[in-house]
Amino acid sequence: MYPTPPSRANHQSEIASADIRQLCQSQIERLSEKLPVLDVWLVCWNQLENKHDMLSYRHNSEAEAKVRLYLDSERWISENLPFLELKHLSLNSDDSQAYVCGLGKTDTHWDYLLLLTENHISRPQQDVVRDNAQLLQKYLTLYQDYLRQRAKVQLLEQAIHQAEHQLKTPLSLIRLYAETIVLGAEHENERQQAGCIRQMVDEVTAKLGELLHCGKQDCLQRETYELSDLLTKVLTQLAPVIQQKQLNLIQPVKSMSVTVDGWQFEQVLHNLLDNAIHHSPQGGTLTIHWQDYGETMLVSVSDQGPGLGALGSHQLFQPFYTKRPGGTGLGLAIAKKIVLDHRGSIDAETLPEGGARFSVCLPC
Image 1 (spheres, helix red, strand yellow):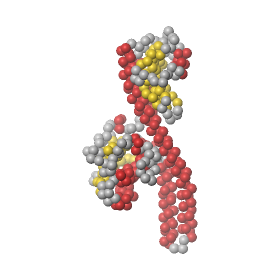
Image 2 (tube, one colour):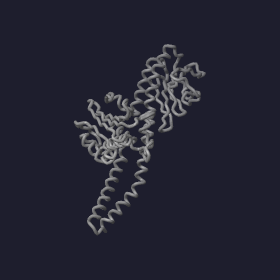
Image 3 (cartoon, one colour):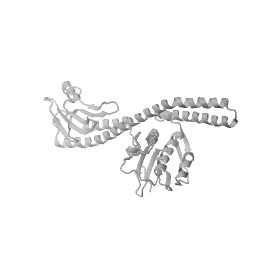
Image 4 (cartoon, rainbow, N blue to C red):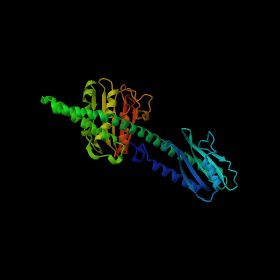
């Protein structure tokens, strides 16, 4: 009934850029061992920094400088490179041959594999290049996904910082007015109410500061918590809207320990449950499930709403994407960011019986 999470190596949706580069570097070095190459270039477009990233293997540092300069210049690139097929390039050189293999296109820029060899590549050797190119293409797809995700995270961080800038002044004014009321109130009831306002402003200001640091690994305050305790806090906050929609809750009887930043993980649970409540029909059922799989743990929230429809799960977690009236489109994006900061993964799916399920995998 519940999805089995993949292994730790596979379940992390965001592979570090350095890891992918190391995989690619190892792959082109293995390729160079199978072919009589002088140079190998692996070139892809870095959409974050708006420049080319290049990995290379150089077997012969004395290869013709003009040839290298010509290949580096990309003047030979046509509008459409052969995808996963080798194309011979005219170098007007008696000392070397060049071949290019297209690996994909990012925006208007090609990702490609470029080979400089002493002699023509034979048909069996071309098959070797093609097999390696297919694997490299998969690595580059992961790399481009990583860059797109980093771009979205940066956008989210900018939005959070902008929100902090816009909220600091009114929060300070509210606190000042509350302090003035406390000092000047004639009745104890008024002083207590103003004191509550001041306390709430302090709490909001503190939590806003914590949220600003949610993208920084060194700012995570990891401790061991019982999931049932975290869930109880969130359900208490959401109790009024749960009662209003007369929703039934199914949750685990047995608790489970988790090592996380407590406040941040509460935000994950809050955003997932808030989303599930919004899409649930009146009198529907919310199911919360968790399970320990040894290397990973799974937490899921299921509802009986309309499901994801034609949406892909990647769209749901995009900053500012929402079809919810009055929504900001930040709740699920923030949840994903926090999960990624904990080196976990989050996904969503439509259930066969209807409704949606959001699943969070965390390393134990």
